[in-house]
Length: 220
Ligand code: AP5
Ligand code: MG
Image (cartoon, rainbow, N blue to C red):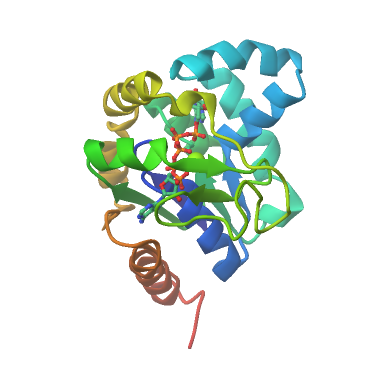
């Protein structure tokens, strides 16, 4: 199975991706996290991606498709994987279908309004291990320290208020057309992302369980 998490910046793709990973054991693959690791390691790719990411624009399709191609054929993805932040353009979605087309697929759109997204991103703190916190709704047990790995928490450079607005514009223009793409494929689902974190997960869990039961991959 492949779970694709669609939705604007701050809708909860990372939060729900981690939650699905815990419950289903499928690895979460975040192109944002992979790119940030390249930036931190100061690789050539990271140096190219850095300015683009800090400005809130999208990195080129060729770069992210190649990163995903390497990752999804790893042994831990054999039973399934969760895509967080990929695909983000029609060209990326077409490449994904071409590379790994035969999987049971659910594209889940986490819907949240812009004003809520802006508030959430302004209060977000993250860890390099992928854990995500929010000072208002999900603070770490100890200030500035990750509950999962004990690492130091930081705020992302692209969570600056001006850049957030730019990222939202980029999403509406370049990524939202994927809704129609997956509707046409018959794999599109949406959930109300303005509920609490556990309620959003229950809605996603319901969709995934039903799909797996319908196809006989999960029997209770
Ligand atoms: P990426 O890292 O993917 O960022 P994004 O899509 O902008 O999404 P975010 O990570 O900001 O938000 P999220 O939906 O994961 O929300 P989260 O769970 O953290 O990409 C960054 C950049 O990399 C892009 O701008 C681009 O430059 C580049 N890039 C990445 N992929 C690319 C691709 N495929 N193609 C080209 N370029 C690419 O939650 C947000 C906050 O809200 C947290 O504080 C959380 O605790 C809180 N929260 C979550 N759920 C809830 C809830 N239900 N109620 C209340 N608060 C909640
Ligand atoms: Mg994220």
